[in-house]
Length: 112
Image (cartoon, rainbow, N blue to C red):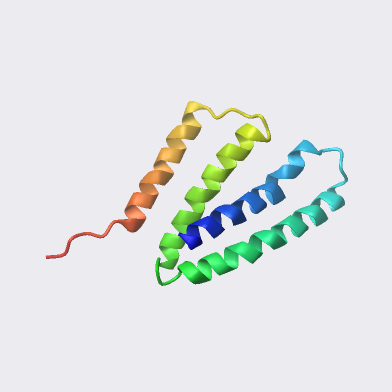
């Protein structure tokens, strides 16, 4: 659970680093890049321990799939709440495809 919590928190930082500046388009690009790097530093301070703690409990492939689902989930909330954008039906369909990817990443066929 600690791995997932750290991944969620790291994704909040990364989403703001990557997309938070979209509300400040008049800010010079070089300032935007420096601020984004500063925010991303805190993302790495959470992401690296999350992956280190989670590896062994999960495979690297499973960690990546978990990461992607968290990334999409955090981004959807961010886009709605911060950017005031509304998802369309096709965005929900694509999200369901990612949920399917999680199923297959954790699927373990019964061996006889």
